[in-house]
Length: 115
Image (cartoon, rainbow, N blue to C red):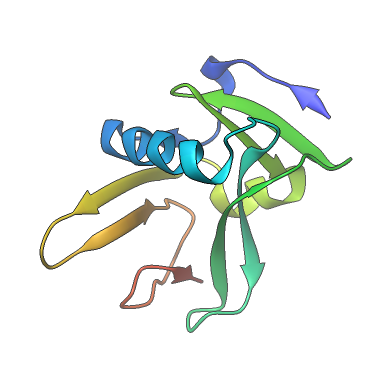
């Protein structure tokens, strides 16, 4: 596992996403032993779906610090999510994480999968 600096993080988080992740982290990861895993997996209505979960680092993972959030991702997933911005909305009509992915050619209506 390779540790990289904040300046090299391929994923960016908005201030609202960081605030929500800090809230979730306090509940889901109180011991601080895990990191936020961001990635992509086959499936979803547009071909791929996003992975956003707490996990322990694995051998092929890269570790980043992005906006104070410790994040891990499988190095092979960077092809699909590199340059992505993660935002968070908590309005009446929309609530959840929003993925702004420059690598996605298509997205589904719910915003949780891409192609």
